[in-house]
Figure 1 (cartoon, one colour):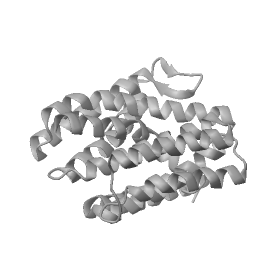
Figure 2 (cartoon, one colour; figure 1 turned 30 degrees about the vertical axis):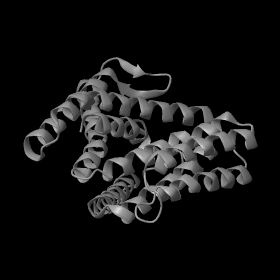
Figure 3 (tube, helix red, strand yellow; figure 1 turned 180 degrees about the vertical axis):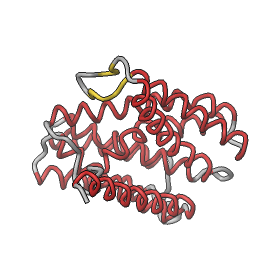
Figure 4 (cartoon, helix red, strand yellow; figure 1 turned 135 degrees about the horizontal axis):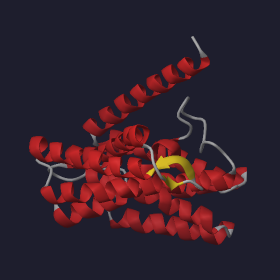
Amino acid sequence: MSSRNSDLGKRLIVAIVLIAVTFAALWLGGFVFWMLVAIGGVLMMGEWADLAGASPRQKRLVQYALTVPLAIMAPGLAAGPGFLALGLVFAAAFFLGAVTRKPQLALGALYVGLPVLGLLVLRAHAVHGFLFTFWAMALVWASDTGAYFAGRAIGGPKLAPAISPNKTWAGFFGGLVASGVFAAVLVAGFGLPFVLALCTPVLAALSQIGDLYESHLKRRAGVKDSGNLLPGHGGVLDRLDGLVAVAPVAALLVLAFA
């Protein structure tokens, strides 16, 4: 087997495992889903610290600081995802800024903490928690898939060549179309509110902007991936950069309209 085929097989296996674990935790909800996203948040915070050039001590500090709001978000064991957790996320950011004197490390608490809170708010919805969380997560996957195939099939002008040379405008709009089709399926088959479906292409655009932002961070740090935890996929941030941008906004939309 060639090295390229071996890498493809590794990527596929890791992707299947990630999807299976995520879907199982999402289906079970509650403590299990919180545990998954909390662990993911701590890992993402560590990768953010690495991209920011933090020392090992600072890296541990930012991870510890984030564990306080993450712990408060635990459903059934603590206050859960609500205003207290939101306040503690901002408190963690203020604390890190004051102690480290590095604004980028403080920003990391918001970059990671708000998406975690957003996902937990979505899953905690009394009636449609599973549907709304699946919608927010899967629209990112639909956007990525549509962007990939449209970019490969059509090509054309680059979206942001200085940041991510492979992304095209065709891929960008392909991602919006794919996410819109996905949302229409959820409306027709599973009762997703129509207003959320209308907002889906906007969230897909945010997802791609989030992807570009993380590419900018990696380019500035001089690295190819945010980490090496996931064989063939890089780090956790590499897999969730789009969802980071989508989750908080999706939660606000659900709170406002659903």
